[in-house]
Structure formats: C-alpha cells, structure tokens
Length: 196
Picture 1 (tube, helix red, strand yellow):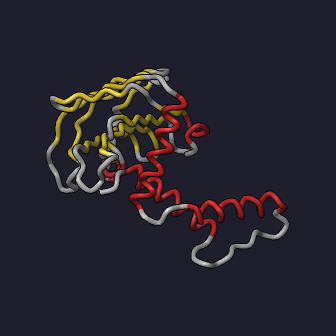
Picture 2: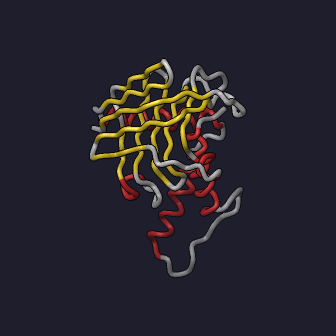
Picture 3: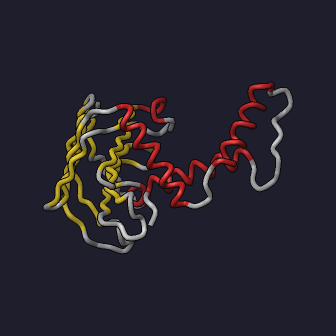
C-alpha cells in the first residue's frame, strides 16, 4: 500500500502531465506567450523525463527530498501517542499558509521522518488530518495510523481537531489502523509538537 503522501505526489504529477500533454505529443505554447512560457514548458518536459515510472521509486525520491528538507530546517520536536504507544520525532519541517505550502487551500503542513516512520499533519482542502506511516516498507508496513483526511471529509465527518498557535501544534482524535483498508481497529491519540 502506498502512503497518502505518495498519492499526493502522484496526483501532482498527474496535474503536470495534464498541463503538458501526454505520450509523445508535443505541446506548443499559445501565441504571443513569450520566451518565459516556452522555457517553462521545456523545463517541465525535462522534469517529466527524469521522473521514475515505478511508484515505489517515486516514493523513495519523495522521502529523500523530505528528509533533506527536514535536515536543512532542523529543530522542533513532536510526540504522537496512539493507544499505549508513543513515537517521538526530534526534527520537523513545518509550512504555514498557501504561499509556503504551494496549495491555495492549505493552511498548515508538518512532516517528520525518523526511524523509518513518517508523521504527517495537514490542514488543507480535505480538512484536518494526522497520519503515521512506515515509509521503509510499503508492502508490509509495521505501523499505519490515520485520523481525519479525505475519507472523513467526503463522508461529511470532517472535524477540526488540530490547533496551531504560532509554532505550537496540538491535536486529539480517534485514529484508525490504515494498514488494512477495511480495518475497524481504532484508538484514541494525541499529538503535541513544536515547529522550528
């Protein structure tokens, strides 16, 4: 099973593909768009050629980029407790507002990768969501928990459970075991984090 972040990356790629065309078809810029538009089109086509076709490889690339961003920003801390288990992350990447995130519907994103696990927190067009995923083994994940997100938003159950106050983040929600799409196993959870 591929994590939600991989699905998001693939969705973003799909939008780029739609914008640039598909297959061997060449997309010509509209008349009078100038050199900048042509250059942007050529850059996009070149970037598409460099993208891996394998979703696992795409996920690995996305994880490496997230780890590099986390290392560059450094700092912060997060503690997620679900049921009787607690995970601590010693370095976070946080982004605030649509301009930093690059999504007009996004308000906040937090990502932390440590010991093969990724904590991902988001307030966006799908509502509030917190997830913990095994990013080392997508085929047989050791852990997978999620609260909120697209499924609950589409079902009309989207609850606003994440509070962001400056760099301080708190959340309390019921988490569902996401390793099995049909799972009904759930446990209460809480998150406390400080962004760098």
